[in-house]
Length: 98
Image (cartoon, rainbow, N blue to C red; front, side, top):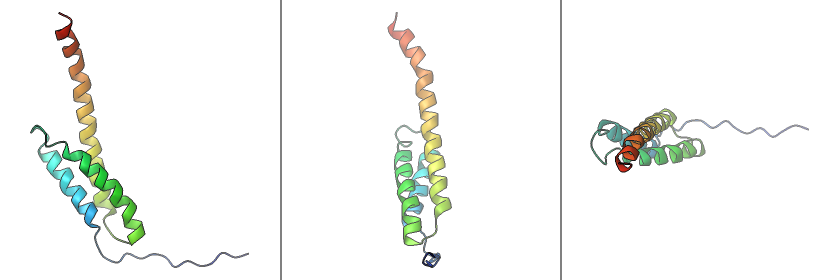
């Protein structure tokens, strides 16, 4: 038995718009990391990056690297936020235990 030949998908040359949006959100979140509230855009960068990674092979578009970069920046900011929060807990407990 032979399997039917499926033509390989080729890139159409179009750039996935959601991958571009994800990178824009990631850059704004990273540049405004020290400004209160701006880093929350990393959540949107991660969400848009995951959706873009799903859309790119389905639509035969480009932009996989942009989506991965947005995910890396978004998850990096989330990791920094988690470390910062965990580092703040001991001083908070000490303050309330007095």
